Image (cartoon, rainbow, N blue to C red; front, side, top):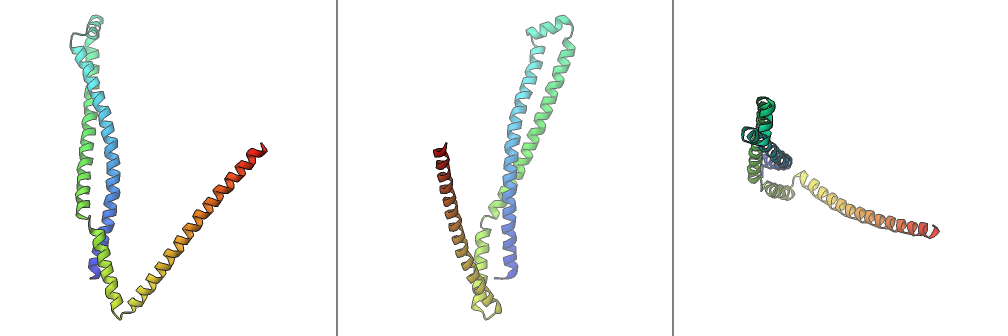
Length: 184
């Protein structure tokens, strides 16, 4: 396995992680935009209903006609309906844009779906070839593997000690609470 292939696979793994983070960000952004779009749609429909009421034969239309403010009120309601439509259309455009970006990211993630396994396989192959050779790196690989194994054992022991300490602390807190309750 060539070093350039390993490097390329490593770059794909890094790109996949970046795409996963971007996908998460875009999904959250999409959810926010979808909620906003629903609210803007309700607002748009409500504003248009106000215009329709004034243009129809409603009591409000009659009232504004009688007091002579029908044109003024109708213009105001039409402006509000137009503004609501513009906001809705802009949010719809934003949502469509995020959906397109999300689709591109998902397509890229599909193409990169197997890169981690390929990288691990290539790395294992490279390590085997180094170990099999009389190359000075073979000894370094063996020493590194030995250190990694020792560190894993040490990590497990530390985690066990931490958990034991947490259990002991919890027990001490319970005893102190019992003593406090007995004194009180």
